[in-house]
Image 1: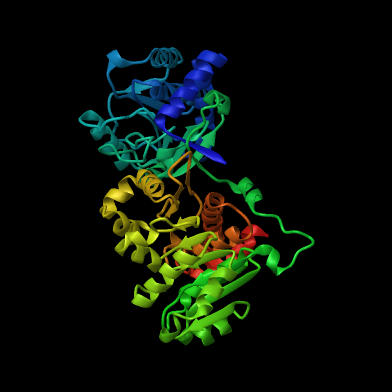
Image 2 (image 1 turned 90 degrees about the vertical axis):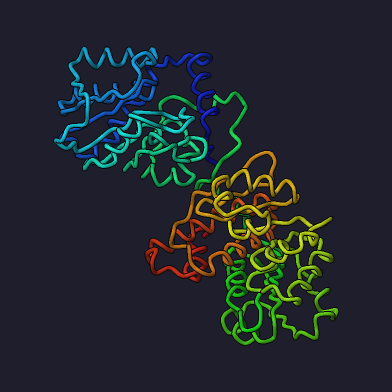
Length: 492
């Protein structure tokens, strides 16, 4: 698990490290500067400009300039800020740099710099930029050299990744101790470029037991996957019911069912219209296929299928017909096992929210931002702008686990903590990959994981499978089936 910090959490950790643990601020700055210089080793350092503000981020910049100067690298410092608002450390670092003979300039010269170090603002920026700050950011972005930002690109909010008027478009960002949420959420993630987290002596001890609310997973978290038992059979790993597909629309059912098997499920049963039988039995002979005609929906067979399962998916490719609505209401009224509501079933819930009233089973709902717009009545831009808050509020109100799918998928129950996914890539923006995710999540549910853990781990594994598929096929050539088949590479 990796914590993703907002501004207040990082400042609190920083203050605790300095004031209670006793690590001097100037020592932390020196380590920060050394880590930046280490990362600059791969840049063209023929001529370097360090842009410094008046805060401690600028103080880091002065230290970086001094260390480069002592390596006989041609470096200039450009100070942009209010002389009267310099922090104590900023004044000290400026004085030290001047003592060693570091050159300072008043403006970005026409002679191009090969590398620019952005130390203008740190994580504390709380209001939109204006005036000279916007001008200097524009000049830096238009310069020919590569840009390395210190801690966070200047102009990006550390709390939410929003652009505060304008922001530095960095090639790389060196951040300290922990990743900040603004480096992960978009558009901040785009502005940050490649992010490197450096250890400068600030650790989780600085939280003093008040740990950050938001986190993501790393590969170490794959240890959360349920272990296979030596003495077991197909029933040991769960029985999954996939209620999916509509007339001559079998793809979504196929992807969800196949992904559940790839994730290790023991048995998968697909309930789908009769027209889909042949293609599903051909594509996925491992699945049990139970088909129906429109006139057969009232039969006991549906109750039997629902009661058979230890976990259920409903919605992929199902459509929003009266038959689909009947299937959803039947599953909600009868089932007592964990339920994943996806795709068309989400649209049905958006049309008739009372379907979810007094539900007894544990529910995971997996809307993308367009479906969340239908569920909440909020415009898509508003949801994208406050994606964590929207997901948390919806999950808390509906008493379910919400998987709000976007470039950064959010998983939350609206209480305690929230997961932000950082695996995956833009090659996954293709039809069928959402159905694969549904199958991965229900596959973990069937093997005994609780809803919150199945959702978080499922989203992470799905993204890793997408990364593996992109490495093999390239983001342009990826298909949902490639993501599905790459699950094996992740979990084996």
